[in-house]
Structures are given as structure tokens and as C-alpha cells.
Length: 234
Length: 117
Image (cartoon, rainbow over all chains, first blue to last red; front, side, top):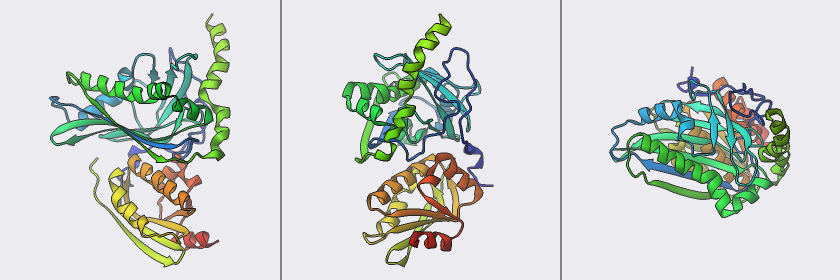
């Protein structure tokens, strides 16, 4: 048995997603997981981190709290629904996200990896981004640092164009992680958390073979499904 | 979980093929050794075989590293193949769908044969 055996989710052909009270469960159940090297757009490596200055907390304690209360650290308007037990390999999270000017977008994630110092997600096809997203904590120069690292491409031409609109792209994705890290740091008593960002384009080429991913675009499908959802709730 | 060191060694099989033998852990911290081994490939190399038979541990940072390596290989129009993966690591390749982009083979000989096919 490998050292990391218990840390990884088992392969899944299609995602299973149980309904959760208050969550719109769409664009996850029955979907395949997007490939780690999938997606359409340019490949970006993004690192966001925050030093938990003054907080007497270990990386393991940070990750334990982050796993258990993940959704609470998300910014207002973005909702993540996870099992009460928190984040563990193989768990599916439902996301109901607010994209400016559009109805709520329903999508999700699969926890592919989790250990005491990190955990990682991959998203289903149709999610705005494809690629691994890792949350971790480590000690740097005696201070515990919490970090979000992503290696992602926009999933399809729609999202690639959206990401090229500076305010929209930055707000939709990057600000979520900046806010998350600020909220996490505040939880540990950091008075004025300063979040650092490093965004590098790793591959400037687009994967045109994946342009067809647009058929599964979660925002478009959420928009199409919104009237029926309103009627059901009405 | 504390990671231990990554050790890599590049063996040239022929003008077009190299085998990178990976020992120890593959994490984000493995970028230096893995990319240094890949750097020995050169422009004429058409296939890179990653031998994972001595792989001890891999986390999601390691998957990210393989994605980056795949991008670099694709850019050079090089095939990326893997061999020596045990059942656990084969499952991780399947989970992340890297097995759709990196040819998985049980043995080095099979991988080299596929590289030259």
C-alpha cells in the first residue's frame, strides 16, 4: 500500500452528487471530471498566499479548519455545499456561484486529494476552469502561510473570452481566492491580512480541440435551466 | 505529510527516445529534478518515457508538475509515456485523466516500442 493511498479519491467515470438542502444541484451529476490537462484557454499558474502573522497555529491546524469550514471562507454571493464532515477524498461539493449580470451558475468540484497539509479539487466538465486547484499550508521563516495554487485553463471559448475582460475575470476567479484567504486569516486572528498573488501564463496556446467543451458550459446550461427552476420554486 | 527527495536520472535509449527514471516522491518540490532531467532530452528527442517503478509517493502538486511537463513536451511535439506505475498510481492517472494524454505501459520495453510505433 502506497503512503498516499488514503489521500486520493478513487477514479470515477461519472460524478455522483446527492441533493443538499438549499443548493441547486445541476451540471455535476452524471458529468465526467475535466482532465487535469484539459480545458481550452491559455494555461495559467496562479498562486495566492497569506502569512498568518501573529497566529500561533500550525499548518495542520490551518488545513483542519479550512477543510471543516471551507464554505464559510468564501466571499458573499459564492456558495459551496459540502458534506457536514467537510473535505475528504472522493467528496463532491456543489457550487452555486453568482456571475455578474447572469442567473446563479450551478457547478461543483470533486475532492481528488487530501492530507494533513493540503487538499485539491478537480472540476466537472462545464465548470469555468479545468485543472488542479490545491489549498495548502506551510511554515515560511517561522510563520504559517496559507496558500491557494491553481494550474488551470478556461474550459471553453466562452470562459476564455470572459476571462479576458479584466474586471470580470479577476473578480470571478482571483478575487474569490483573495477573499477566501483574507477570511481564513481573519479566523485565525490576523488583524490586517495581506494576500499576495502571482499569476504566470505557463502556456500561451489554446487547446482548440477542446473548443467543443462549450456545449457543457455550466453558465449557459444554468441560464437555460433557470426559468424552469424559478417556476418550480414559484 | 512530509515529502522526501525526488531523484531523477535520464537514460538515452536512442537518438529519439529518453527514459527518465523517477525515484522517491513527486510533489511540487520535484520541479527542479524533473525538469533538469527533461532538459537533457534535446530537440531531436521525439519520445520521453517516465519510469515510475521506484515512485514512493505523489500528491496533487506532482500531478500539476506532470501537466506542466506535458505542456512542454507537446510544444516540442514529443510523445510522453509512462511505465512502471503500480495499480494505485494507475488509478490516479485515470482519476485525473492524465492517462488520456500520457501513454501508460506496464514495462519500459513496451513503452519504448509504443514510442517508436
